[in-house]
Length: 525
Image (cartoon, rainbow, N blue to C red; front, side, top):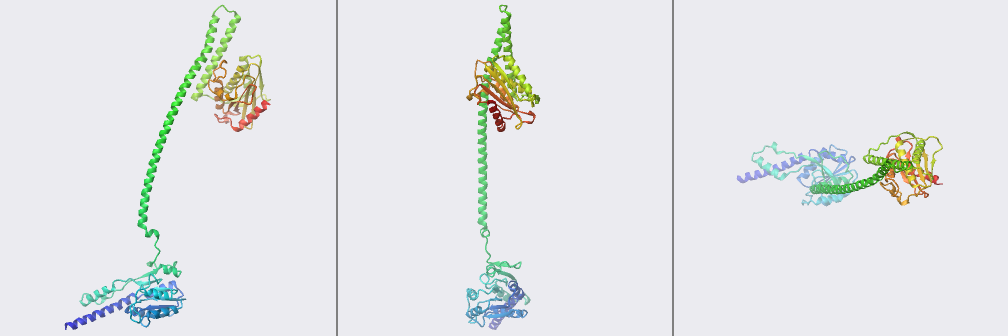
């Protein structure tokens, strides 16, 4: 009795497993409409579907449901490649004879053919090579990854264990009949390589589709290595930036120290030079002031005595007057130099007749020097008046200094003051020419230094030409020695026609210099 009960339970178990297998097959392929939709979406001209199924319960159930569903699609021919009546090689021959145009292959299952022998997984590859031009779609995930383009396939689970557990639970009363049926969900699955092989790579796939054999991006495949490399690179870059920053900072500090050292050295040199200049200035001033003062004091004492005639006393008075004028000019030059060094030299432009100013300057020097063998020549424009905007006091001071220097070194011949306006450059050129001893060419710049006297036996402080240069440049002009003149000395300086419109502190630009040189050549000729 116990043996009969055991056999009954075993039979019921087998029957239950078979029923559950059929139920799962029925549930897995109850949505053939979606599978047909997958085919027609990517092959709208499909006229024939060839279904491959094997000689198994699953293959039989799959074929049955496909035949039932295809009755609704009378415009599509269904070709059955049935493993119950064909071997694998016969299926291959039938695949070769299929016309690839408007024909689609539907892959079911393939494990057992009509010879009832199990086939290995490599059988899929043999069947695929029989006619690779026919696009294939899968019903049960067969051929996915190496043959099928895609499909609407079940999400398989460990069915054997699950069915056995469910049968045992049912036999022992732990499950009811209604709870035995479990519908396996399906998903859209596509093969990227097959889509590209059949020129369907740009097709729009369902939103929840799974794509196999996608090309793995280099960055995705090596994400961790790339992130680690980037982190190391970022760390090294930050370290490098910090190192460069501190190196640059150290270099800036070193450069700043070097600059400060150079500035201190220059300041020391300037201080030493200033001290030397001060010492030289005091020594020169002591000598220059003592000379006229000694003459004034000495001849004043002689005037107090009664041993001299009136004519001699007049000569003493004349000497005292000359030395007084020399002392006054010396003090004026010192005051002007002091103002220049302090930056407080006043320049007050006003309208002035430069011809009248030049004649006054010549008369002042001529009356002071009283040279009998020297002729003073005026080389002015033919106009009676020449109005310019200038500081008449400073301009007259420059002309008198140049004319006085000429009178000191000229004993015979002439002293000529030349004026040439140039309205193209808005400058006026002055030239003082004499027939004196002249200045060597190598001393052309030296003579403009302070306390420079080429002849130590001539009265003067050596400040005149230096003061002339500063005054001329302060009024926007330039002064220089014409070295092309060899019959004496010719000093040339320029001045703007309108001091109000000209930037002060300027110099002899190229255009003005060329114009002045042309005028000098004309004077020489």
